[in-house]
Picture 1 (cartoon, rainbow, N blue to C red):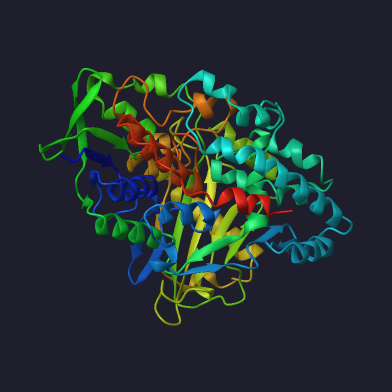
Picture 2: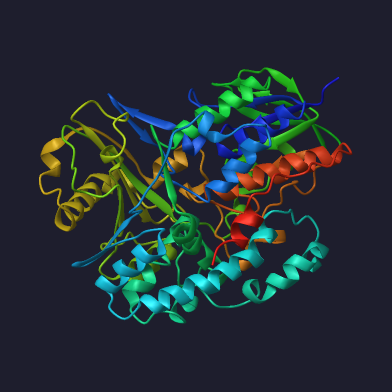
Length: 506
């Protein structure tokens, strides 16, 4: 009889582990509480407009290629990808720069905006090619025991990991201009962290983008969830929407079944949790729940204020991705990290994907996705009272800093998610990027892929090792799927494109 595996949540981690395990012959059921699959990677509909709820581009695509290859497939068989060049427009006050994954193009852009800095960029890229080669293998394995720190690969990486330096400290070794440093540190937002406190090893994030590029998926990144679900069902997996798990039942340290809010009981041999970790761990495990007060002692990421705008025109001259830095970015980030004060000088990310993708809005129309990093709900800020005023502040800044001067007149559909909205959607204190990626909450000290205290419970998603961001979530799912196989005495050989790809860079 096939081993029965239940996966709670159909986010990217749950779908990836479901694909892999169904392909390997397990009886896998994914339970999704919502009526649409994808979790934070679900589509959001507003009239005739389709938005991504969360992630808006794919970096480190080779990891997605690997997990599809482990099922004998290619993602291109299910999805249409466009490698973006330019990637992102960055704007500081009255200075803007386009970014590119072509080194010579990037050199020209840096020289135009920041004369004399091009050689520093080349130096950064050479050094970080080596840094990534050393660190990357450490993110592909679990850390279930402290002795896992003494493997050869992690020992080689320790100079990069065991340091008190921040990402901003690292960038100071290459660039003098504070604005140019931010071109290599804003990626810390994927972790919901400040570049002034984000550990130095995460300077590899910008390198990965500049070396390997970023991709748009036609129809939005939510289409990846649909593609993965199709693979999962082709492999015999069962996907159940509108199926919320209320609790689990035990036999000793083993979870024997899950109980749905409908009262239905489903037995399992193994359980994978892809729900928001902190929320699930404080609500779903009954007598083994972690008290909320204990969870609140952890360090969490920031949250986000979101606007999804359907427009009756297309801003063809605006970039696909645009980041508008706060005038005082360090103060902006400090406010966010303080978790109490909503910054009056926000940084704003705008995606205008309709210039490259005509499938997400009616002909002649477009949609804008607006994300503003802001405080989480730890201290109970009242977003309902302040949401309307904050929306006006965000729109004012977009209108001031971009060519969309008549933006307000063309908004015909709109949706908004505040940090309170994220919390209401079962994201613990609205911390959109899960736990902060501090040294004391990484590797062995992050919630582990096999959950401590249980014999058959596994974690996938941004709240577990290796961390937040789509590629690392895919990796978390592969690690956990492999651990399940190993528990039954089956070693899985991984598909690995990264070693050859990273070796060939610089």
